Image (cartoon, rainbow, N blue to C red; front, side, top):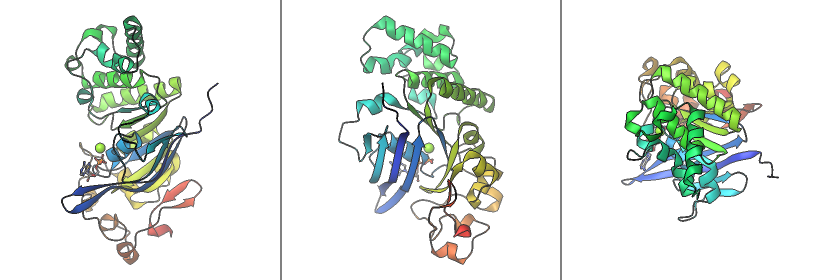
Length: 318
Ligand code: ADP
Ligand code: MG
C-alpha cells in the first residue's frame, strides 16, 4: 500500500531574483504555501505579478534564489540539484500552459503528442500507448478521428484538451495550470473549467490553478492566494476571500473585469501595476490604494493570519 501523503506541495520562503542589467528584479519574494492532497489552490494576480515564475519554481523548471519546495513530502524540488529533476517529480507533477499550440509538438500528430510522455517514461509497447491515448482522448472529449490529425487542425479549445490529455498520461498527482483558459473564447472557457473539475474528481488530482481572472480562479479553487508584485497579499478559503475580502487589492480584483493579457487597465483610475524593478516603498500596493495612510508609504505590512486560515498583508489589520 502506498503511504498516505497529506501535503502534496510545500513551498517555504521561496524567492526568485533576476538580474536585469545592474538591477535586481524580485519576481518572487518570500512566498510560502501549502497545498494539501486533493486541494485545488488558486493563485490570482495581474500580469507581471510573478505567477508563471512561481509555477516554474515549484515544478523545478527554474532554479530558486532561495527557499524550499517539497513535493509529496519527500522530494526536494528546491534547492535544485544540477541536471537531476527527480523522475518522480517528472512523472507525478505536470503543467498545462496558457497557449496549447505552443506547448504541443506541431509536427507530431495528436496521438503522438499524447503518447510522448509514455514513450519517454519507457512504455515501449506501441499498441499499449495507442490504447492509452485513445482512452485519454475520450476522457477529455477529443473525437477519436483526431488521433492522426496535427495540432493546427484543431481549435484552441480542442488543443487545450489535448494538452490536458498529455498531462494526464502518466497518472499525475499534481497538475499546475498556468492561465489554461486565458487564450480561449469565453464560451469555451467554461467547458474546459468543467472538464478540469470532472477530471479532478475522477482521478483524485491536486491542482494549483493560476489565472489573472478572479472569476475563473473562483470557479476551480477551494482556497485562493492573491499575488501582488511577487508576494501573497491575501490567502483564504474561497468563500471567505470572495465574500469577505480583506485586502483592498482583492476588492479591486473583484470589481474589475480583466482585459485580455491580464492587466487591470486603470481600474477606477488607480493606475497600472508598478514595475518590480522599482517597487513602491512601504506597502507595494499603496500608490493604487484608496485606503492608504501614512504608515502604508513607510512600512511594508507583514503577512499575518487575522482570522482562522485567513491571511492578509495590510496595515488596516495590524
Ligand atoms: P505573471 O506570470 O504573473 O505575468 P511572471 O512570473 O511571468 O508574471 O513575471 C514576473 C516578473 O518577473 C515580471 O516583471 C517579469 O518581467 C519578470 N521576469 C520573468 N522572467 C524573467 C527573466 N527570465 N528575466 C528577467 N525578468 C523576468
Ligand atoms: Mg504568466
